[in-house]
Length: 102
Image 1: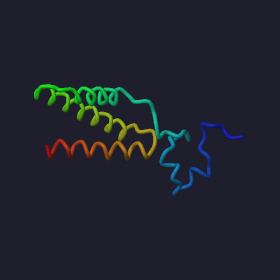
Image 2: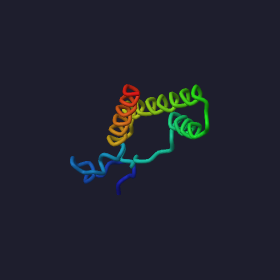
Image 3: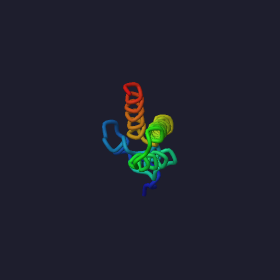
């Protein structure tokens, strides 16, 4: 009988798609509750939908981008699965590119 915290040898074979979505202990980690950086991003996203003055809109936009950059860096460094680390890297590149081209 296998424990739920061990990696199934069939899933651990290179080339298996599910390996990209599993943590080192074999848990599926595609979705997790948002961490604080994502809560800040969501709040800034909602605030950005309001009719704000130009100065406030710029500040909220900066907070929104900053929160996503913090989240992406966290995922690149501490992501629980290869998919989450790659997703963090993609979001980080997209955010830096949007700031450079702005």
